[in-house]
Image 1 (cartoon, helix red, strand yellow):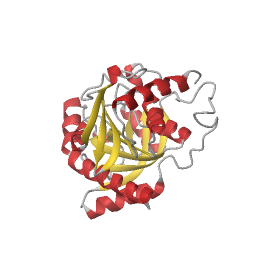
Image 2 (cartoon, one colour):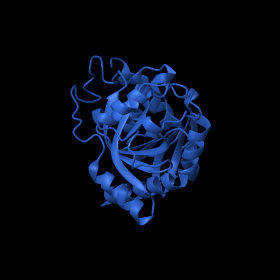
Image 3 (cartoon, helix red, strand yellow):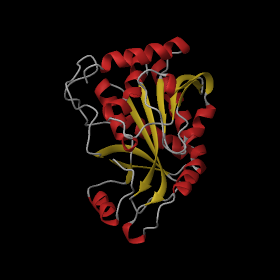
Image 4 (cartoon, helix red, strand yellow):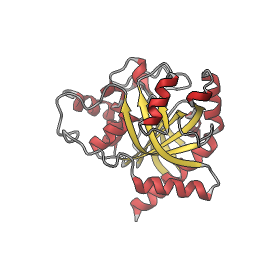
Length: 279
């Protein structure tokens, strides 16, 4: 992690020069979920290409820009599109925006993703609130010489997702008649989807959904002391005995259909986080 502190400072300085806001929440929008950015009252929009040391998003449906402004009256900064290991970027670079969020003053990180359902009780289009995670990506963004200015050498991961906020999101879902589960997210490197045998294995070790993101960001958030809320939109079912070939277009379409529910959950939890902070 040597040299990372300086990169964070450069990226933070660049963004601060273009937006004077002090964000309470940072939001990462996954595949097919960029519509939430339209609900933010824009005060600045910055292309990743312009920000020092930021990668460029190459994944389908990821616009690749920071949206800075207010959501439900609360100052936020949102990534409209994220980065993935399968795009060829090292995990330290993929997670750089999380550290920049921290440097900008963010208190809570909200991450969303499109995922495959492993739990047979789940259905496409439903949302799972992440309560825990499994890292099977074959890498870790904290590998290397630790910079104590960024976080401890051995960060605790007993609660990578804030359990009080998990309960709060589930309560919001009930009030709005949104089907929301809670469960375990497992991350793999991708970009290929898994085999039947791999899906059986992932379910056997306790995963409820599988995806190719989120876990590195949550690890770095724990390292730098951010609270995390994780929301997974189930876009395809990965049941090995009833498996159908995956269609990226269908996955994106289902994610977009679920956007109104996701937007409601994010908007309301942002409002609640702000109320707690003020109190």
